[in-house]
Length: 178
Image 1 (cartoon, rainbow, N blue to C red):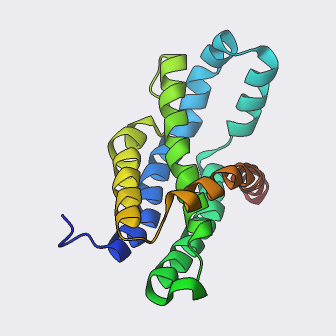
Image 2 (cartoon, helix red, strand yellow; image 1 turned 45 degrees about the horizontal axis):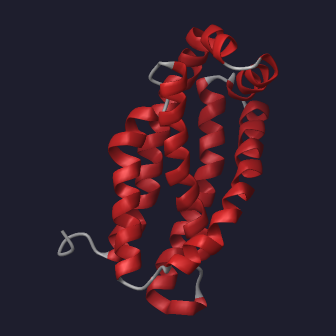
């Protein structure tokens, strides 16, 4: 596989994987929320259910704008990671690591939501068949090629939490822009 899937190709595949996954969410989220809000209220404590429904009750267009905002971060981190591979320490692998770790861990939240709600949730299908396998291949390749170390991964892990306000801001922008 390494003959045709080198490090730079794997890095440049990240925005594509992001878009494939988020297209599934964009297409499904509005209709799914309308059809499943009762299930959320049944299975989740009321205050949390209200927050989840308020956060994700948006039109397809609003959600697409939110995805666009996040895509800007995904694309920027990909460019920086590619520059890191080409130029070494003059560029940055940390932001790419934080964003890809967020993406990887986020895919498990889709699977967990599907199990908890006993329903296929938006994003769960691509999480299982695309995001988790891609992420495992990406991290394995970056580790084997010395681009990432376990120390970098563990150092970046706490910063994954900083992506939450960015995602919330993206949702707010999506709701205000459309």
